[in-house]
Image (cartoon, rainbow, N blue to C red; front, side, top):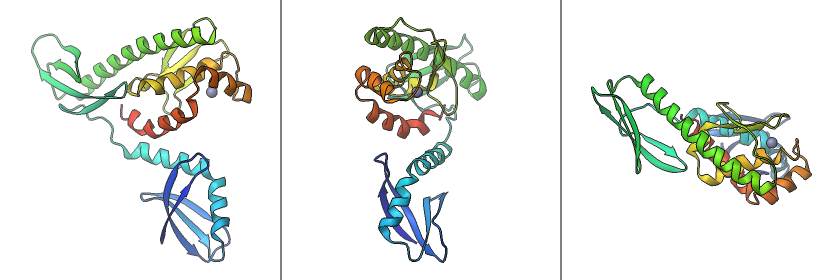
Length: 236
Ligand SMILES: [Zn+2]
């Protein structure tokens, strides 16, 4: 196998393993090591590159999925690291016989509980807290950007979808994935602006992107950052 690199159509640089075989077509598969390409012996490099470029979307989606599965879920242990608005925060679990309290103290999220080993209860409590933070934060951003766009502030709801960060339905309601509250503000702004732009254009046409670009010029770069961060955001 030969180690190769290629820049995909979306600008993502990836390394892959190339193996020449007696076959007629190019075979692609995603393994533990990443992308493995089986190519016919006579295929020229530029032909292979062309094929890989055409398959860019498939390759990058499959690699991202593999990363999602590779990143460990949060274990709800004392000292574990979590993310909030792109900042690293440390989970501190303290045992108490008194009423359970959850508070953010600088870079530490402190939770006092009766039973430090009841990870299910701890997970529930902290996820509910994340969802509250998410709702307040998203509502504020939606208000700011809808004013900028010149539309009335739409109603919002939180979603917990595994594969979508946001959606906008025909009644003009916006749903945002609460897990986004872990991401840096720019990434949240990007998803908020994308969904708000749908209030003007209910599709992904050139007109839609013109609206989005005016509202949030950095959307293309930030979209890539969101893709890279996705596996981390799914730890919760
Ligand atoms: Zn969209």
